[in-house]
Amino acid sequence: MEFIFDYASFLAKTVTIVIAIIVVLVMIASMRGRGRRSAGGQLHVTKLNDFYKGLRDRLEGSLLDKARLKALRKAQAKDLKKDKKSTETRQRVYVLDFDGDIKASATENMRNEITALLTLATPKDEVVLRLESGGGMVHSYGLASSQLARIRQAGIPLTICIDKVAASGGYMMACIGNRIISAPFAVLGSIGVVAQLPNVNRLLKKHDIDFEVLTAGEYKRTLTVFGENTEKGREKFQEDLDITHELFKNFVASYRPQLQIDEVATGEVWLGLAAKDKQLVDELKTSDEYLSEKAKTSDVFHLHYAERRSLQQRVGLAATASVDRLVTGWWAKLTQQRFW
Image (cartoon, rainbow, N blue to C red; front, side, top):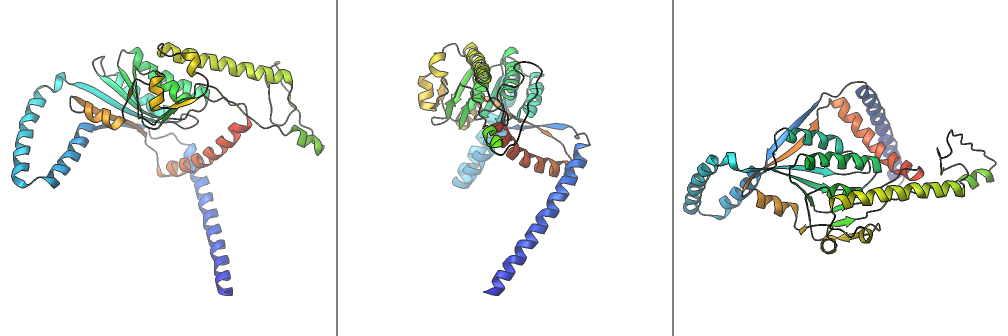
């Protein structure tokens, strides 16, 4: 028994040392990586028609006998020749993905994808965004929404597909679409604004700790974590939230005038089935179903822009991102960040 305890103690010390070495190496790689420019990015384009065809061919090859499979392939070859002749007249569908975090970090790649497709897309084409986001910082999702608005301004039809969630800032992005398609049990809505922070001023006073906040400008700091908050500061903070909420409502209403905006802008969320009744979405369908249908009559291309980075940069960014997620989530709750 004593041997087991000794071994466990030795193992714990070894793991601790290994983790410490990894942390040091990650920090060194991160610091070196930050001092260099990224190696640039690259746009990856995948034709989803080929993907769907590959799935079908695999299934047909497994289920059909040789004679039937041969006849089928011959018929498909004839159809392919016909399709090639009509390729120039076929609609192009450009598929983008947005997986939103609290800072809408995916905006950087999405803006490059949109810039690329706008050089070639025409009003007869279509852009489909597969959107997943529970919302986040006001200014971050405001920028993401502005990027999508570029597609609308170019006169290119924009379809938003939501399989899981598009709430708050996520719904702000979704409403820009000419059409919103949702899975039956996706979460939608949350047209509201929230900000929260603790205040430890009384605890500091209890331990005779002074904390001073110096500002130039009456409302430079309305509520604080450590200072003494005033009723005037609270009223101003609430006023700012109300103004932001009103802007949010007006933005949504401008793109979806069919909404009873005061009825749905309460901060509530609805599942897809109920959201359709509220006219928050136009159709109930998964993105897989929609895109596979489009692939029958259109050329469907998935666009993904990715930054090229060195190994040191990738290691450093991975470590930074992990710490950033922890710190951002914690600090945002302690400060005056406003969230859709």
